[in-house]
Image (cartoon, rainbow, N blue to C red):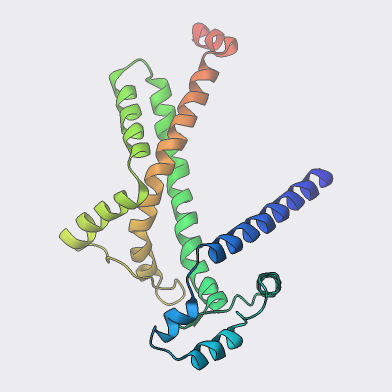
Length: 220
């Protein structure tokens, strides 16, 4: 078990390292100059060279990548020059709403999927069981972002029950926090429920077709 865990971690690190190299190379191959974007096309050569030196863009690509890698390991991801904020601080700021939405979607999806999957398996040869299958198929086909837009349009814009966006920290206002994550949780849960329900349904049908289940049903 320990060997498998270490092997998995090593594979994960190698994959992340190779992926970072590929992304870094693609960014430089695609072209574009951040200095020109920041200063504008009318900037003088002296200003351009000064900012390139300040950003470290005058160094080789290998040195630039190693500097970025060292910063990524130590938590120094640099500054967003377009928006003007520290990237690491912004990631930390967004962790809480991300976790709230993720765990909220799981809390909603798991029990609903178990109930719907079981109901569909028990009524597999009936119309109501087929109706659940049709609904889950539609849920799989609908993109999450499109479902989110529909939820915002109906529940927030038309009915005015929930806010259209934003996030309130749970420590500041628990009720306000729940109100801001309801729509994202519902949109994310739609696809998860559809997929999980089909898994539960298939597993239930397989188990119900086992000999010991049919024997137990025959004795009832």
